[in-house]
Structure formats: C-alpha cells, structure tokens
Length: 283
Image (tube, rainbow, N blue to C red; front, side, top):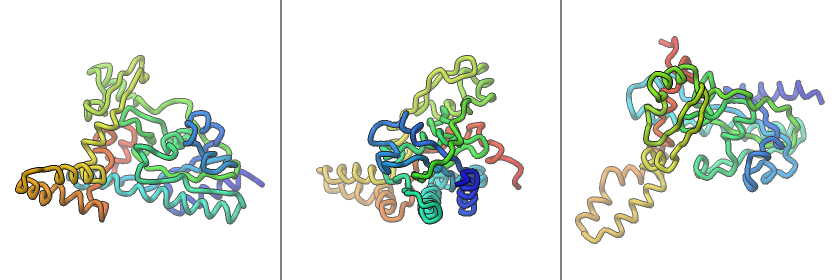
C-alpha cells in the first residue's frame, strides 16, 4: 500500500467535507502522554493512528462583530469537526479495510474529556498550546475546533511541532514593555503566567472560574438554580426565582442549546495568532 497516496486521499476526503486542517498522530506517541483510560488504545485495542481535523472555525465576520451576542456564536459551530471525523471512520473502513472509530465526543468534553483533543491536535502538528486559556491555537486561524478518528491504519505522523507558537513575537515585546500579554490583559482573573527570555516560564488557566463566569445558562446552572428555587422558604421569592428571565433562559437552553457557550473567548480574540484571518483584508 502506497501510504503517501493513502494519506493524500484521506486529506482530500476531509477537505471536500469542510475540514480546514488535517494531520496524523501516532498512537504510541499519544499514549506516552495520555493517562490510562484516556488513550486511543483504551477505545480501539489495535489502534495505530489518529486522523485529527479542524472544522467549524469561527468566521472572520463573527470575530469582527461588535455585538456580544454575535461573539457568543463562536462556540456554536464545534459540531462540524466530529461530524467530518465520523464520516472519515466509515471511509477508512470501507476503502482501506482498517478498523476506525470516532474520538468519543460528549457533553463533558473540555471538562472531563474521554480523550484530550488538545493532545491529539498537538501530536498531529495542527497547533500548540498557548497562554490564551491553554487552548491549541493555529497560526493561520487562531481558535479552531478539532475532531479525531482513531484507526488501525498506520499513518505517518505530521507532528508534533518542535517549537511552540506561543508566545508570539508581539506578545514578547508587550511583556518586555508592560509585563503582560494581550490574553493576560483580557482576562487577568482566569489566566496567569510569566514569560522569561521570550519563552513561557509558567502559565495557569483557572478552568473552574472561567466555566462559572461564562457558562451561565447550561445544564449545570439549571441544576444549581433549580435547587435554589426548591430550597427558597418564601413563596413570593420562590415565584420570582422560578419566573426570572435568567432561569427561563436556562430552561430554553436545555431544549434548544441556545445560550450555551464555552468560554467568553476574549483571550483568544486578542491573540496575535490568526489575527490576519480575523481582521484581514475582507470588506
């Protein structure tokens, strides 16, 4: 089997379905970092590779909008990546005769993921982690969403990168002058870190704080608010809580998905990575 042709064919298949980035990661490399229970071989015993793609990237127009509600939809298109990855599983099995499964998605992704898509994206060379919420950003698009296909097909790895994209040279200059970076300035509560000699010395992302501040209409908030309503002893106050606009919005979100966001995205919005894509020459 000519692996160069196979890899080219898989890349073209994913691109035709809307993938903006495609890379391959070796399972043995992933397993050296991932903890037991969260490795590709925990889901497919004879797994050899993972095809990692990005899709559903926020449009440049979304980033450009000045309306807060428009910026919320940055997090809505993340279903495109696992959809393309699911199509890849069937394609690889039918054409190349190798077992393939979708990297298990789920509502806990990002908080208690089955497999870290961040790690997969890094190992495939699609980007590197950054101080901006420690997400894996790409130099062209900045924030992107990833999906993965675990397969027994042995593909040649395209990563990881030898050099981190973070910090950007503009961030280094800002640190030297002001002792901060664009992402740290955008959200000093959730993000902390320090640069030294043009490199990250340490960084910290308080996910729980970010989660509690940005996700205020999803399942977790509904459960919290429902308990507050039940435990309220004053009937009039209980009625006010039950019919409040915020509680009503949370109920709508349970049925429609409206209003459910991941983070506020301010740290990635100001990141120099992908800046030209977000604020480039479009009219």
